[in-house]
Amino acid sequence: MWGLNLTALELTAADRVVRSEQCLSTEVDSETVLMSVESGCYGGLDDIGSDIWRRLEKPVSVAELCDGLASEYEADHATIEADVLVFLRGLLQKHMIEIVPG
Amino acid sequence: MSSSSVDFSDFRLCGWRVRSELSLPEDLAWVGPEQPVDIDIRLGKVPDALIDAVQVTPFLQVAGNGDCRLEVSAAGRYLVRQGREVIVQPAPGATSAEVHVFLLGTVFGLLCHQRGLFPLHASCVRIGDGAVAFCGTSGAGKSTLAASLVRRGHALVSDDVTAIDIGAARGPLVLPAMPRMRLWRDALEALAVPREVLTRDRIELEKYALPVSGIGQFLAEPLPLRAIFLLRSEKAPGLDGASLMPAMEAVALLTGQIYRRRHAEAMGRRSELFQGAARIASSVPVRRLTRQLDLGRLDEVAAMVEELVGL
Image (cartoon, rainbow over all chains, first blue to last red; front, side, top):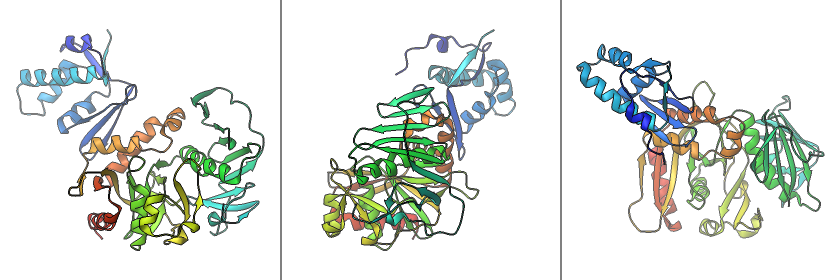
C-alpha cells in the first residue's frame, strides 16, 4: 500500500512536523478519525492520540510537543519522547503528517 | 410507466418544490402548501461538452463550478446546474421510463450533492418517531428488509437513496424522496405482492418499481435519523446478529456508501462529506447486521431491528 518511507524512520526530536494537507480529520465522540485523501485509507486515534493530533494543527517541533505533553501526562520525558516518536513515525508513513523543512 | 403523468406541473422531492416541463410519475405530484419553486426541470439542448470540466466517468462531466453533464445513449443528456436547474435533452426514441430512471437516479443524486445534502445509498423506514436506514452491497437485502418492515406497519421513508440533511440543528434529518420501492423479484414473491401491480424499472435488472400504495404508506415529512444498519447476508445457517461499529469503521462505511460519491468528490465535496459522515456517526448508532439469506426468516430480522431501535 505505502512504500517504505525513509524520512519516517529518520524522524528526530529536532524535526518540526505538521498535519498533512491531504489528511482529513474529524472527531467522533472522543475519538479522532483520519482519512487520507490520496489513498482513501482511514485511521483512528484514541484520547491521547487525539490530544497529540490537536497539537499538530500548526508546525511544532517534536521536542516542543513532548514538553507540552510532559506537563500534562504523568510520565517521564524520555518515555513520552520515545512513544511520541513511534506515534509520529506511524503518521508520517501514512502521509497523515509531514516534516516542515528548515 | 403505469401511472399517468401530468405535464408542466409541480412535483416534490425531499420537500423541494420541483417544477417540471417533463412529465414525472403522478405519485410525485406536489400537494404541499404554496411555496417558491426550488428546482426547475426543463426540456432543452444540452451542449456537447462543458467548459473547464473533468470527465469523472464515461457518462459524467463535472465543471469547476459544480455543474454536471450526464449523457446516457439510451436515455439522453442531462445538465444539472447549481442544485436549481435541470435541462433534459431526451435521446431520439427514448421512452419516458428510460428518461426517468436517470432523472430520478443519478440526476437526483447530483441535485442532493449540489444542495449540500448527504445522500446515502440506503433504504429507509420510519420506526417509532425516527428514521432507520439500511446500507449494504447490491443483493444484501436493503429494499427487501425495508419492505418487510413496511408490511409490519412501519412507513417507508426512502428507497434506494436516503437523503440526509446533516446541517439540521437537532441532529441529522432524513428527507423523504420518492415513493417507490425497488425489490428483487424473488423477494417480491416472498412478500406476496401481485406481479401485475408492478412496472419494469430497468430492463437489465430483475428489479421492479412498486408504487408504495401497494404495500403500505409513504411518508413526506422530514424525520430525525435514529439508526443505521449495514446489512450483510450469510448463506451459511447460523445466528443472526447485530454489532455496534467503532467510530472509525462507521465513518469509513458511511463515506463508502455515499450515493454518487465519485461525482461529489469531483465537485469538491470530499472534506464536507467526511465531516458529514462523522456527524452522522456521532449522532446515531451504526450497526453491522448479519442475516441469513433466507427470505422465510425476514420477519425475525425485522423484529430484531425493531427491538434494537427500541420500539
